[in-house]
Image (cartoon, rainbow, N blue to C red; front, side):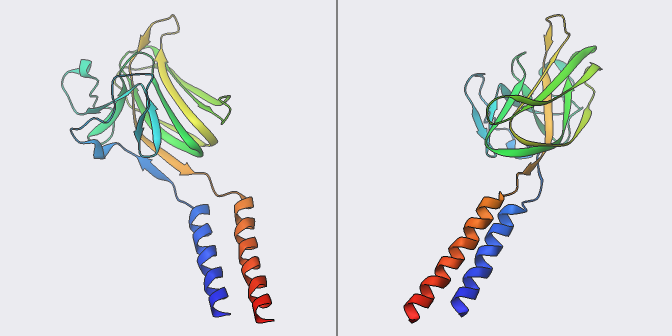
Length: 200
């Protein structure tokens, strides 16, 4: 009985820990002087469990705006698009995106951002119209839920593109589905039934 109780407590603790994972922020501060992001836009760069496309890491501040090391980003490090194509972030599992900071390098352009589901369908989108160059914007998404991909870019609307810089993404892992909780309960029940058969 003691073993069964221990197993029950251990299983509940495990699934509770998974199901109620707290939000965290990807702030890129651990990049230091090394840059895990390459210049190939089509190849993913793995970082903190996510695949980043089209991104390069940058230190700030800098007096030269053309280096895209902008004072508009938080902390010492951020990421910026290494081409005019923007940044794409993908995950193998669903996540909720709560907020982020963004800056671009052209005044009067629009910053576009969107979220996609597991099938690659756009389910969320938003924009910052007529953004000021090198100004930091905080975007509160009120939790875009169950997304697998996030894209952000900036454009004049007339075909002209600009670079975009991204920082401090607040991520909230999607809670464990009820089916997993049911599986855990079923496993505990099977252990209990087996113990009774062994006793008899």
